[in-house]
Length: 363
Image (tube, rainbow, N blue to C red; front, side, top):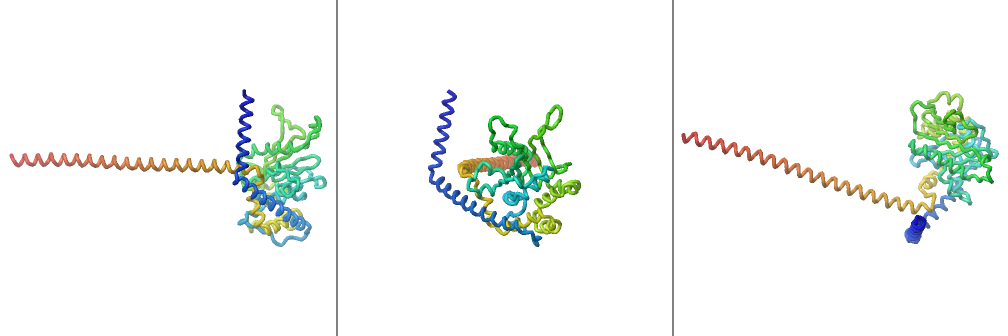
């Protein structure tokens, strides 16, 4: 019985989806998204080519260009993905975060932009800003501008699961799986009484002993790191990244350029960032393009849901306003009734006084 119900439900869902896909509006929207996606891919390849040329420069940059108007500053998700798609930058970021030596020799970095530009584009990774893979590690890095603790704490294990599921297990050789490290970078969130680094690993609850080679999670709170003199002294590379990804205006960019003009990783970041500034219109447009064709239906359903919520809220507001107006009229009527009653009472008192006056005259 339950099996029949489930089969009927699945059939109904397929029928609904099929009807949606045959909808002319859906067909038109799908074609539009496909064209935009191909343009996005071509633009990405173009910008990656320009970045490759910029990385060949060993000159000290004379300017560091920032455009808040076009959301072209380091902590923007797409910018972060572009900059760290470079193996040297990604390895430096992960080495300073994990306190491990991450070499570039056997490192492969996948990001939103490199995945989108690849001919064998695999959509399941597109949720991740960055994924670096070598012989030992799978490293995920995510720029988290919209910080919510509950969301982040649930999102990081999901990213662990995605990274683990990307590996192929031969037979029962689970011990051959790479160790996963997920890093979330919070450029604006400041924690009270924190060093700026939240480090999680598997441990035995009873003995409190860490499990060897267990997966890791790091949460980097940049405002805290920038106030931590110990990190500044002992981990200057991480401090440099914290400075870079906290830049929001030209004044901060100029100060960073002056302080780190002799740092090869910082120069590399600035050279690439300047290219992205020059491509600001393309980068801004890429921020608006849907990553998944299949999300069209989700977007339409969500839009319908939002419209229903808006209509419900508007109806509730209208009802509330009507009740307020009704209440005000009732209050006015009550006030008028009280005035009428007071006037009637006064009229009665006046009539009584007149009657008494008339009697006194007669007497």
